[in-house]
Length: 396
Ligand SMILES: Cc1cc2nc3c(=O)[nH]c(=O)nc-3n(C[C@H](O)[C@H](O)[C@H](O)COP(=O)(O)OP(=O)(O)OC[C@H]3O[C@@H](n4cnc5c(N)ncnc54)[C@H](O)[C@@H]3O)c2cc1C
Image (cartoon, rainbow, N blue to C red):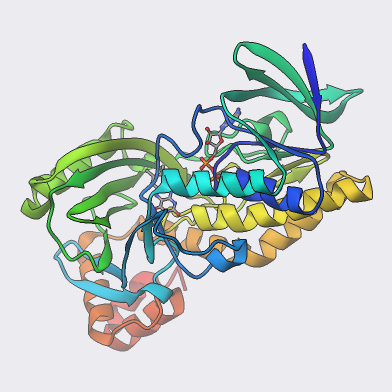
């Protein structure tokens, strides 16, 4: 078996992996990032909506190379068609740019490579490498050959289906109510108001929502996420989306040029994301926003923290769980409260019926929303419909 040696090995070439690899390499670590697919970023499994505000944090300038379309904001639409508009800067983490995710991921990987990281595609992590009971890297399969890749730190950025966490003994198991089953078409030849990313709430998408994210020129990603515990089979997501499209003539005339099936976690944050020699980041660490299902932003920001701490651990000669907890502190400070709050919001939303969605959205449309957050929504409901606020008493 061939052997390789690095300071840091990153498993997965999505946003979490590429940003981790880049910051670890920039801080002087010898880094290898491996990706099991033959091409970084492809096939795309994403609605491709991202916010604008965080890109400077990972030193990424907006560019037509990867931006497909720019939106002014989001519209949250109730089952009866009432809607509230929210400005892009306040509309959560999926409205601002609609990107070409395949190019976006490749650019992040190129930045990692430019910083000095080695990148290998068609390279599949098969297990953690252990020496005298300690984690000492990973085992990898590349073009039919097995490799031992020795590394002081392993970063598990291997996405929703992460195995690195499981191999390292970190509990990443998900309850069906904390999983959204997703299906999406990219439709060509449709009409609508492309100034907004649209989010449709209600029984048309049990426990989730339907999105229309415009890519410009009559093309949009039209997708659905439904809570796994509310459906009897994963294929139900497609069934609900097809019913929705059929009932919207402006969408029904579109031709699908791409189909995507997948899943996202909509769980509360994990109790633990590091152990001796291992850090989990992005979807592997269940960092997706439980309300929006958006995860690119959190994956990239946490990737930056993971890469920096991995390089520091190498320099200090200390990759124990105690040292790596520095990463855990950084990501928790940045996003844990928001993730936890939105997990509670998601739990509540899953109990609401169409009538309540209609009443809430009508109120929000009436009062207007500067910023879509729980406090503002509850304040508006209690002022406008004291009867309705009783529905949210347990939540309060
Ligand atoms: C249908 C759908 C729509 C979505 N829409 C949006 C959206 O509009 N906006 C948004 O922000 N988020 C969206 N998300 C979520 C978003 O795609 C993820 O949060 C994001 O990709 C997380 O990045 P990541 O790097 O953690 O994981 P990923 O991007 O999943 O990257 C993980 C990588 O690891 C690789 N890998 C896995 N196992 C191994 C292994 N053993 N060895 C080597 N490589 C391995 C995989 O091939 C993959 O490339 C959507 C998700 C789905 C499913």
